Amino acid sequence: MASAFWCIVEDDRAGRPKKVTGEVLGEGARLARQLGGQVEAVWLTDKATDEGLKQLAEWGAARVWLLENPALAPYRGEVWTPALAELAAAQTPQAIFGAVTARQRELLARLAARLGVGLAADSVAFSAQDGKLVATRPVYAGKLLSKVGWSKPPWLATLRPNVFRLEDPKTGAAPQIERPAVAISQGTMTLAERKEEASTGLPELTEADIVVSGGRGMKGPENFVILEELAKVVGAAVGASRAAVDAGWRPHRFQIGQTGRTISPKLYLGFGISGAIQHLAGMRTSKIIVAVNKDPEAPIFKVADFGIVGDLFEVVPLLTQEFKRLLEK
Amino acid sequence: MKILVPIKQVPDTATQVKIAADAKGIDTTGITWIVSPYDEYAVEEALRIKEKRGQGEVVAVTLGPERAKEALRSCLAMGADRALHLRDPAWENADSLTVARALAAAIKQEAPQLVLFGRQAIDDDMGAVPAQVADLLGWPCASWIMEETISEDGKSVRAGRQVEGALEIFTIPLPCVLSAQKGLNEPRYPTLKGIMGAKKKEIKDVKAADLGQTADGAQLFVVALEALPPRPPGRIVPGEPAEAVKELVRSLREDAKAI
Ligand SMILES: Cc1cc2nc3c(=O)[nH]c(=O)nc-3n(C[C@H](O)[C@H](O)[C@H](O)COP(=O)(O)OP(=O)(O)OC[C@H]3O[C@@H](n4cnc5c(N)ncnc54)[C@H](O)[C@@H]3O)c2cc1C
Ligand SMILES: Nc1ncnc2c1ncn2[C@@H]1O[C@H](COP(=O)(O)O)[C@@H](O)[C@H]1O
Image (cartoon, helix red, strand yellow):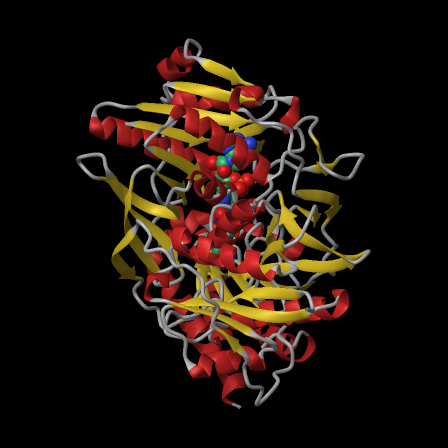
């Protein structure tokens, strides 16, 4: 049997795989071609949908291992890990990849311990060296890159969202579905309550293609409205520096940086943020960085691709207008 | 209630890190060391649980070189009761699984009801050890928790873990593993009295043999540490705000194709 590169499916809890799964499958497919093997999806869910299964095939999954059981929702590591470990022991995949999401970063770590293998968490690149996989991961708050290898397979890794490309969709591809018999335990922890975050109507911070972010220069919580307006026009998420979060202007979950979230959008726009090393830790791998700051010496300009030295309260409304005009065309 | 808090000593967040000559680690000369920030949330939470219940014991534990004692001292100064220092040549170049195995063995010996970790150590940024320890012990775990309450009978904990778009609150039987996310609490500063008192508290040295551990070899190894590829130099868009904004949007669209 060809050696398999497994990708764990991240779904929206309603039977639809998220885009990040397409990215993981995309990278898995490229590595499988290079190292020999095929890319396969492994979906643990309480309920899959036909549409979701088809999506996985279109994203390139040659096969979908489907574990469908009510005990698999909500995600609990103590339930998912033994199920996945049993399947892995039977099928001996070459690699098991996940996405850097709340559940998968925990799942892959638990699984690595159970299988007694290495885990390269939060990887941003892979290469093949002498037929073996090498992962690149940011360390020391993104100040350095660490290249790591595994002593033995399966190679476990989590992949940072927004970093890896999707393959061209295999339109019309039909999924080959396997429903292996695997023991699913009931688990000991129980969900008492799920508190949905007040919907901002904007994308999730770590998933967004564009992130607009405000710092101490915003001067107060009320001024974030202007960033939200800009965000709405371009379909961005709104993040913040720690200074803005610690001042109580934004909830913790919006903090970008070393002690916040790590993001890697196509476009990051920072307003009134100085660019402290701990902030850069969370956004340095953004593809294009734009900074607006009234201080020309602000360190953020050292990493910015484009900068405007000026007052954000003047610049933001103008930007919103200009983007609106552009996107209406 | 006995609570164990594994902590790691890491370079201060503002430190410039330089790659060592062998390109596998960092040059440690001149580095200021601190307790990894997330671990401070874990220590703080453990102390609060003890204070709230009016009894209990908080044990800080680290696996690391001699200098890591300093980090344990900081935790003792915050209020931890005693500390374990896991130090042995067998653990040099330990990867997260080796650390997790050693910690799990120490936890078995100590038999705490709760183990509180930081969500990740900010040097290797792996975020793996807490879940690995939970699995080795066969315990449930909740990662990145933003709140927790121990039940009155001390048999379970309600913990809220941060997931995309929501906070999921679980009832988890003890013993279990939790990992702390920023927002859980505000860590206290040690008082002068705390710092003085810490000198008298016990830091017990623990060897691999004491835990029945042998050098098992790292599963994940560093091939090389590298500097970041330089970012292409940026461009300050000149002009009055209105002009600059127009030019910026044009560049984002046409040159960078970012929108
Ligand atoms: C252990 C540790 C962890 C940390 N983790 C994080 C983290 O995860 N994320 C994070 O962000 N920080 C983190 N920090 C804090 C970090 O060191 C900085 O203090 C913080 O990022 C500063 O936020 P800021 O840029 O918003 O504020 P400041 O540094 O105060 O910068 C404000 C900027 O706004 C500009 N400005 C003011 N008014 C205007 C205006 N009208 N128009 C345009 N520009 C204006 C100023 O010129 C200035 O450059 C951490 C620190 C430590 C010690
Ligand atoms: N060497 C160590 N000694 C004690 N605890 C550790 C050590 N390494 C990691 N930890 C704990 O595990 C958490 C996650 O670490 P990591 O998986 O390395 O990112 C840390 O926040 C600590 O609570």
